[in-house]
Image (cartoon, rainbow, N blue to C red):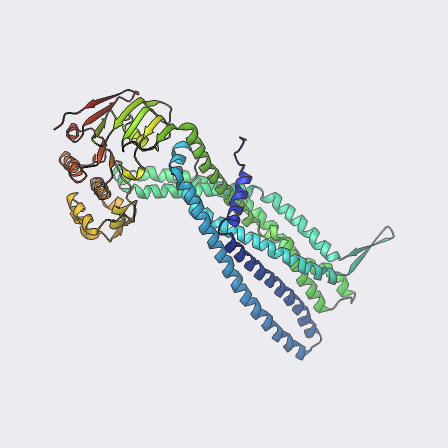
Length: 577
């Protein structure tokens, strides 16, 4: 293991404890202590109920009607307190679960989005397991399961301490004669309960060991299947045009085969655990009566005491059997913890790989210029797309980047913004908030059209009047009356309309540097030229750096950078028109 790299166990421990030592810790501990106190209150009520049960059967045995009525009155009081405490215990536990989940969700989202970790995980790692499920589902399950198991364990410990004392007092002594030697076993029912639970716990733990690994695999397979279905929905039109339904169905069934096969193994293991658990539970019902029966038939205890022993034994047995009763939950909890720990490690690993891969030095801006010095770019296969590019772009320049497909034009734009990991050299560029990059297919969030135009700076002071005028200029007049409608605009609008919408958004945000990665490729030539003319007219102080194939675009640029895909490049001036 590399020095400084936390192990899976260390990462798991940090996941569980980090919230309890954060700035939110006072509230968390307050809610936890309140919940624990209420749990202890429930244990004490169970203690009184068990004692009440012995007294109740005693009154019945001796036909004491007055005592019977008094016992019923006592039960109503104890039951009322039990109901009130149980309700508040659930309330505070659920409050704590939600606060913990909110903190963990914020923590994971911050790490995942910080420094574009999500982007580098996709490009540098190939084993990233469905981060959407990790953040949305596993964070929720970890908070819920951890609290449930922890509070359940504390409650059972309190139950064990309370009722093991009662059981010890009621057990009496058992005298065994071995080779004419008498052996006195004090509190023999306690030892019987402990021995019985140890045997059952050991057997179920041994049989259920594979369940943790199988649950981890099952969650991964389920996530892969869900992702395939979501991707199908996002590309339904293309699939329909290809008539790809059969191929997609075959792909779905191949993925589902993993779910089916692994679930079969889970089913077999669960069956064996259920058999043993049911046997263990059913035998335990008569075990207490069986062990206490000698004292009862020897008239050492009365019927009420026999039922009180049975009740106390049940609570002790239940506390000692906590692992058995919760084995499935514990296995699920362990698999959740492993998945989140691996996800956390992958985020850290992506950042470390970025530092090892990217040898790009980024300097603060110099007179708002783009300056590249000895800039070299590689593809993930380590082949050089561009070697030793030296380039200076000032506010008076507009660059058109050309070259054959796959030569690295789009990758160069990503490198100029500082996000491409496989790069080296020196880069100076203006602040990121002054740069907008428009890809061929811009991201359009599912939101109102008003917020789509504001994205990503949702608090930018842009008036609705400016939006309407810009939509009209971008030939999107039919959207003017739909500013407040929330839709999946990425599916409703054609690719050409999406590109027009992206240009409208750029015009509204007025960047100082606009990088266009074939951002007008879905438009006809006439409309493409119109859009470039519109950009030049509405953003006269914005520098354009464009990737394009149309010779007609030259008139909107002053420099031409041509790449050959083998690492060479050539920079030339374009005639002013």
